[in-house]
Image (cartoon, helix red, strand yellow):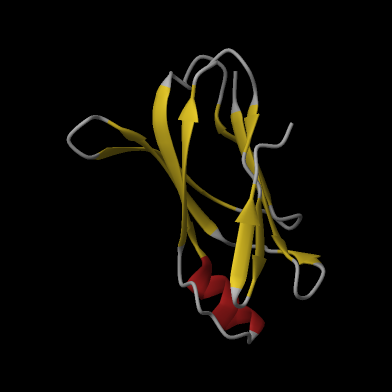
Length: 111
């Protein structure tokens, strides 16, 4: 189906706007960029890929967090966050959010 993400700044309690996100797929020898996007005013990217574009296999989202931290005036211990995940049911919607703070982050498979 599709893939979406949402970045929340948990230290400030606000969406992380303007975070650059890159989606890649493992091709066995390296990574192929599928798409790039930037979080909106609500910290979301609704459709990184749309129906039929997500395939089974290992993918990763790279969140370029340094720019967001700089704009927000906060310390950035993690200048980028890479979340690697396996798609086993490409016919289902996948939502991979990022909860971000200056010295930590968390992620999970959402709905």
